[in-house]
Image (cartoon, helix red, strand yellow):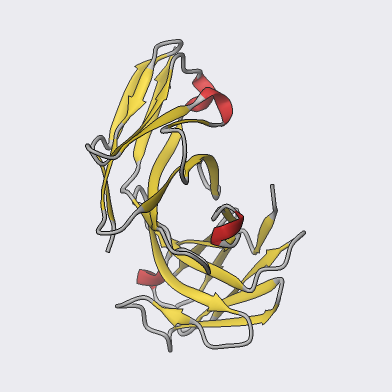
Amino acid sequence: GAVVSQHPSWVICKSGTSVKIECRSLDFQATTMFWYRQFPKQSLMLMATSNEGSKATYEQGVEKDKFLINHASLTLSTLTVTSAHPEDSSFYICSAPTPILAGDEQFFGPGTRLTVL
Amino acid sequence: AQSVTQLDSQVPVFEEAPVELRCNYSSSVSVYLFWYVQYPNQGLQLLLKYLSGSTLVKGINGFEAEFNKSQTSFHLRKPSVHISDTAEYFCAVSGHLSGGYNKLIFGAGTRLAVHP
C-alpha cells in the first residue's frame, strides 16, 4: 500500500511556542489530506481537511487560527500549532485518501506525539 | 450524518481463542465501512473494508467482518487470536458519495488484550 510519513515523530516544546508537523505522501500524490487528533485512550477526531492549492476546511470547534494548515504541494501538508499550551498536548495523525472511485482507502501516517510543557 | 458505536471498550481473551469485536453504525445514507488496527504510538493500519458486494469481507491477519444492513452492524471476528493481535481496533464509517473523498467517522475503539 501507499506510504505516508510524518515528521517529527515526537516533539516537546515550551508553552507559547509554535510547532510545525509535516505529513508527506511518499509514493503517490495527495491533493487532499486529513488531520486527526487523538487523546490518550480515545478515538481519532477529525480536525481539518487539507486541500492542495486552496484553504483547509476545519471541523466545527477547531480553531483555524490556532491550527494552521498549509498544503504546499501534492505530497506535503503541514500542521502548525501556534502558541501551544499544555492542553494542546496530543497525538496528531494525518492521512491521505484515495478517491472514492478508486476504493476510498485512507493511508495513515505514524503520528506525532506533541507534549507542551 | 453518520455515527459509530463500538460496544466494548475492552475485550480480554486468551491466546488461540476466537474473538468478536462489535460495531454498530447509524446513517441516513449508504455507507462504506472499515476496520483499522492501531499498535501503541503508531498510526492506523487498514484491516478490511466493505464497499459493496459480498457481505462477508476478509482482511489481513486472519480477520473477517460481516456487514449486516438490517442490524446496521459490522462486527469483526477472528477464529484464533495471537499475542501479537493485542492492539486498539477502530471501526469507521464514511458516506456513500459518488466522487471526491470521504471523511471517516471513527468509533471509540476497542482494546483487544490477548493473554497467554
